[in-house]
Image (tube, rainbow, N blue to C red; front, side, top):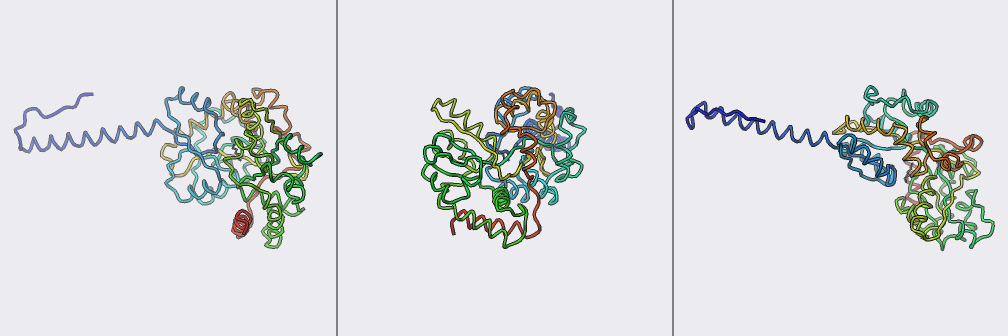
Length: 379
Ligand code: N2P
């Protein structure tokens, strides 16, 4: 690039001053351009740890030259608060459909420009129709992965402590006499109040989304009865805790059992981890790909979302992390042992027992959050 200067000016003449001004504005212009160019080259993502494989990210970077900055959160409440506050700096976020629904109402997400997507037709129309209940017209979110919340366990440690332990039932976690057997080998729960309380209410035969204070109190009493046996609620420490043998029983997410098992296999430590969908029924969750309203690089976010809708890319995610995806065209590319695993893709008779997480009546969420804090802190 050539910068033209006024070569014939005498110092301090009007011409000289104008030239200096011009040079200064050229500088300001160039540095602004530099910032814009460097901004154009990144996409900052907020996601769970172990939710987008490094190989998938590097495939996108190699193809587009856009650098991915991967930031992690380990509770939905943290992500929600950050997005409601604004100025998060995130270009792409992965809330659950339920949290996305509240973020949409609060104006914290932006409408997706579907004209920028070449791969949208790969998505599963049934999942899109279902998610439209949370996001009218699928305007703000593209489905990413989904799964169930259930029982992750170490069969060896569990059966050593209790023969015929009811691993397929929430009794193992919610009946204090049964749970007590496993306190020493480590019980953990995801720190996800809306999900866990809904499961506890459903276990009690109550509406999982009740706003009734007395019913919420029953769920709190149930959870509190097993509180002494729970070691921790550190969501981010569950996969490695199971894989290392520091935990034997977890109320958590389906795919994390597969990942913990794969990690233990890699470590060659002989540990096996299994998963069961509770026979009492449980929640099924769906996670969104969405763009915050104030995202610095929304075009890059659209490109990344479009890339994640490519069957090869999203099948790789499912193969590594054992969560089903919302992409119909990818199904054939998912490894046979993953796609035929009923814990990953539950058969229809199991699906019928699952409930999706739904919004609660006004005020109920506050009651629930307070009750969760009391339960967790044991107060
Ligand atoms: C992270 C799994 C997150 C799923 N390993 C939460 N819906």
